[in-house]
Amino acid sequence: METFEVWKYIHILAAMTWVGGAIMAQVFAYRMKTAPPEHRLRFAKDMGFVTTWVFLPASVVIYLAGTLAVEEVRPIFDYDQLWIAIGMIGVILGFLFILTFAIPQTRKAIRMIEAGDGAAAAPVFGRVALSARVILVILLVVVFAMVVKPGL
Image 1: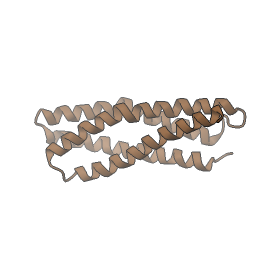
Image 2: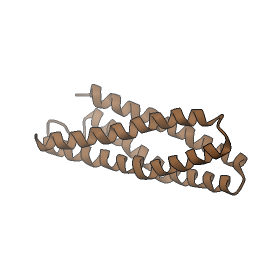
Image 3: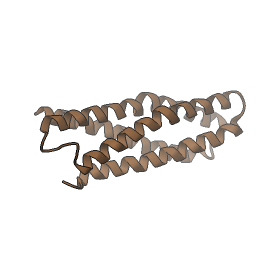
């Protein structure tokens, strides 16, 4: 197995983890709309954990492994190719969303629920869920770009 294939494999595994997890998170978030408050709190805590300890590291691994894969085969693949630019921009946007919005806002909503203000936490979760859907669409565009490789 070539070094390129190792980096590509790691890159794809991390992408599967993030994208697949994000799809399942949306399914569960939809189910939480009618769940009792204690289930919503548990879901929020679980998503806070998954976002911090699964999605955020996966985004870093995706970026690093993808970059290392490109470095192995340059100039066949290079950063000026549209599909690679789409991938890098999408992953960076997702990383920034997680770090600057999803994690802090989820923690804020959890604190609100634990303080007995679940009604005020609902719009916070709504904004996080909507933003997560937008990032999921971006990630799906990235996956499409990785498969189709526009500009190649």
